[in-house]
Image 1 (cartoon, rainbow, N blue to C red):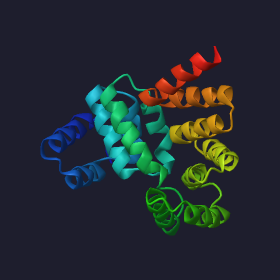
Image 2: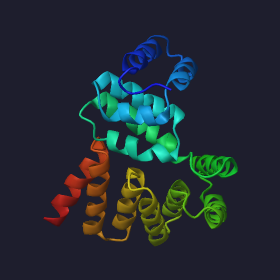
Image 3: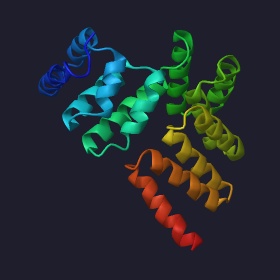
Length: 218
């Protein structure tokens, strides 16, 4: 495997080829043959902007939940391109926790939430969480379903559990804030939105919520 000092130009070459031909499979194959995830983590934290972009993209494709923190930190990178790739990649890492069967189960929950089958999500996510209580994204999926079922207190608590397991889960912080608004707790909601923006400063819609809440509370 390569080290950080000898291979960044090669990684950049692969990235440039990817941008040109949009061959994700080719990019993944080339990077995985030359780089360990630990090396990609180091490259994501330093070097030129294009090197960081390439490394963050690669981690999003090749990494798992153990690489969550490096993409979480990349959400605050000075380069917008890095931040955009980190936001896309980190969402993928969130579903790559647990064992293969549990990951497949989680993807089914995501499909059920998207289809509006919220009661089924609550039932099945509860079963998954009994088996895998440290699966942060499972807590988040149940929180979403409970919110749409107007079970706001339960939704807020599930978001809290997700954040305790994954402090970079800005969606759970946003979800907690939305639940607290429904519970008429605007100051606590504001704290949650600030927490989400601290993790991911590019949440412009949440900035609008913050401005509205400040006008109400001032």
